[in-house]
Length: 210
Image (cartoon, rainbow, N blue to C red; front, top):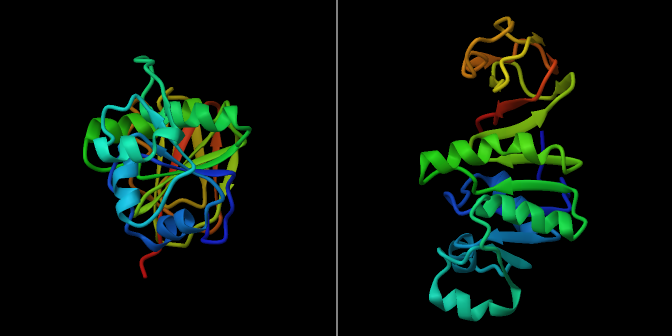
C-alpha cells in the first residue's frame, strides 16, 4: 500500500473528482513531477499548484489556463487514446517509469471504468503503476503477488480475461471466474494476502478508516 512517504517518478492528475483523502492529497503536494490531464489543471491551479506539464487534446482546459500555461501544454489529437493514456505516454517519453494516478474516478462513470481498465495496458510499459482514489488503491498484476492491508478491509479482484485465480488470506475463496465482477466484494482474512493468477488482473484494496 502506498504511503505519504512514497516517491514515484511522477503523479498524473486526471480530470475526475479532485482528491479529498489525505493520502492522494499529500502525494500531490510532495510529488517530484505532477502531470495534469488537460482540464485537471483547472482545479489543480485553483488549489494553489502549478504542474510540470499538461497533456491532452485541449478540449476541457479553461481559456484562461490555456493562455496561462501555453508553454507547458503538450497537445495530442490522437482520437484513439484518452487524455490519461496521453499523459502516461508523455511520462514514458520523459523516462518516468513509476507512476501514481489520482483523480481518475468520479464525475463520469464511463471514464472511471475506462481509466481503471487501462491499468492492464499501462503495466506492460511501466515498472509500477496504480490508481489512488479517496477510498482505496487499484493495482494491476500479471503474476502471483502478495499485498499488505489490514484484516477485515474490503478487497476486490477484477479478472477481465476470466482466467483461473486463487487467493490466500481472503475471507472467500477465488476460482475460475465466468464474469469479470465475480472476484469483487471480498475481505482480508489474514494480512498480508496473496493473489495467484495466470493472466492480468486488477486488485483493489480499501483504505483503513480513520
